[in-house]
Length: 83
Image 1 (spheres, one colour):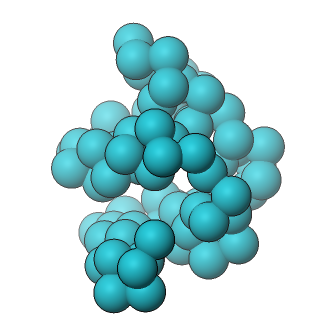
Image 2 (cartoon, rainbow, N blue to C red):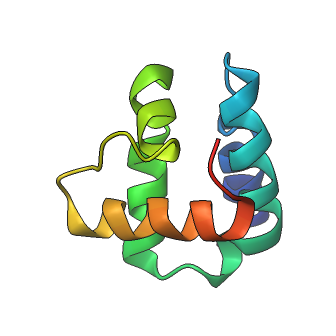
Image 3 (cartoon, rainbow, N blue to C red):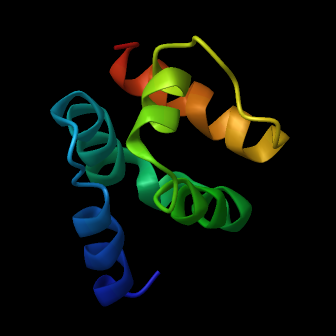
């Protein structure tokens, strides 16, 4: 991935909800480059969602319907823990 695109993803991972930001920013910094193209696309789609929806997924209250997104959430939780 281009450096400018990675910077954009990193910046977009900064959220209005600190609890989410504390999970997404370290994940992008430490693990984003290891993701498959499909997972990177799912991550970009994740960033378009509302904070409350991401928050519920990271707390494992709910799961996304999309299997790639569901796997991505599992990776984020595995790397950073639940909220």
